[in-house]
Image (tube, rainbow, N blue to C red; front, side):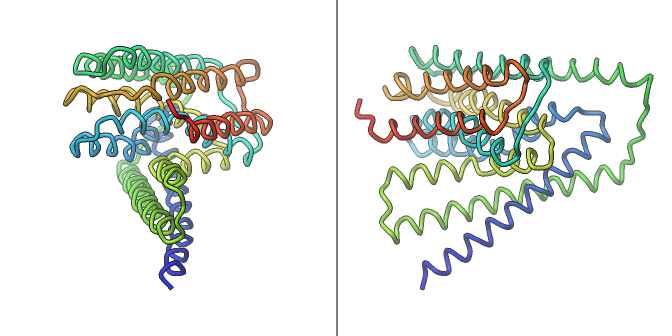
Length: 316
């Protein structure tokens, strides 16, 4: 009877998470409009940071519990899933995800650069100096985003002025926070039910691990999927690229300040190169028309499926 209850709770949690994602995305966009913040900036900052908290928390907990190497695996696995799984599935179901050339060049290049920087650190060490470099680079990136937004707002100010209602803004902010909180709680329940069901039905550890990895990235999945479904393509792309940047620079940068992070061979020889190759593939697929159609989405999904299949049989 326990498994029936778990399945019911799982279904209810899934519905709640989808609704929470709707609330978060809707109010986040309205907050951005009120403050003059573009959709893509919201994606690479607020949405990316908010939805990446589970990965960040997992890395910190892993270090405090004496398993720092798990942090690297969590970040690499999450970043590959963000592009191949989340963005691929969202493109297939929404039909098309588009962005602007300038946004893709800025955030896509930064995502690729951070992936390469991480790989170079993995070859040698991920210690306090690596942490400082990653965090300073992220702060520099945020500064660049803020300056770009100021210039964009300056161009708009002559043609259109917007008034911000403080009371309405506070209300939208509270709803957005409620949405992200609902995402966090709902996704945590999803993970719990999944783990319990995997124990009951004796699902192999590898598959349970994959399901658990999905659990930590579930907030990104539902935020990106909801954004794409609503036609908020810039927010969808921005959330994925911003999340990947945040996961590396802060998700590993902060733990590296606390302890030198050991790296397994599989991360250097397989996971990190695949993350770089996946990023390059995503940028190439969007290079010409700056969009992902169902066809490109399927390519990303197949890429991810091939990666995870080979990963299960990796023996080095």
